[in-house]
Length: 114
Image (cartoon, rainbow, N blue to C red):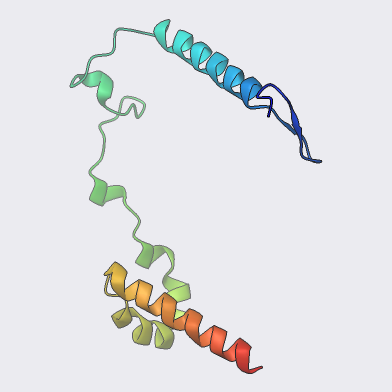
C-alpha cells in the first residue's frame, strides 16, 4: 500500500501526509503567534484579576444566581415529581450506572416482547 496515495471516500479525500503537514503548519503558526505575544505578564499581580470597569470584584455569593431561583416556576410546577426523584440522586456514579443498566435492560425486555 502506497502511503502517499489518496483515499477517496465518496464524501471527501483522506491523505494522512497532507493532514500531518497541515497540522504541523498550524502548530508552527500558533507557536509564532504565541512567541510574538506580550511577554510582560506577571502572575500574582493586578494583571491576574478580572477587569470590571475599574470596580472591585464582588463576592461570589453576592452575584451568584442559584438554580433554585432560576428554575423556581419549573420546579414548583413539578414539585410532586421532584419530591420523589431527588432522594434517588445520591451522587455516586455506581448508582447512576446501575439505574442506566436497569433501564436499558427493561427497554430491551419490552422491545423483545413486543
